[in-house]
Amino acid sequence: MAASVEVIRAGILPLVEAAGAELEELQIQQAGRREIVRVVLDRDGGVDLDLVAEVSRQISTELEQPSLSEQFSGTYVLEVSSPGVDRPLTLAKHWRRSVDRLVEVHLKDGSAVVGRLLVATDDEITVDVVEHRETTTRVIPLVEVARGLVQVEFNRTTPEGAEDGH
Image (cartoon, rainbow, N blue to C red; front, side, top):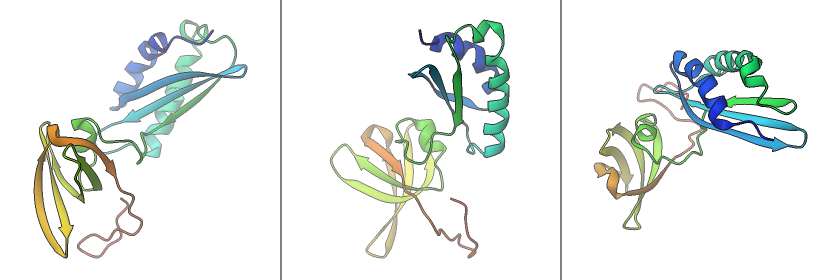
């Protein structure tokens, strides 16, 4: 019997919210004799290792309480992480959290643009697009977006010439 996602969610959600994060995803999978509890956190400004470590400790302590530990038929493994760069940008909050990143935007008309995400609101995104050595700023309504992805940048340089961590 796998643990109840609803019961575990109710038990850990207050901890996640108190840490200033959002519970993006919770999965519980059977893996042999144990269960894997996967918790994905997100927040504006990003998720750092300190947040992951702190929330992981708190969740682990909470999962040992009788009300939650009885959900598991045997042992479990807890995995706490951030969504990762390969998560598709599907909601306005995903776009907002990716401001200043290089993004690939696929539009419903079949076209695509790649550029730096400058602004994201609940209704539209603004992207600096470089085509043929010319930079243009495009405002794209989210209703026209089929999907979006963050592009990995290995040696991004800020305008001042300093290495950037994005």
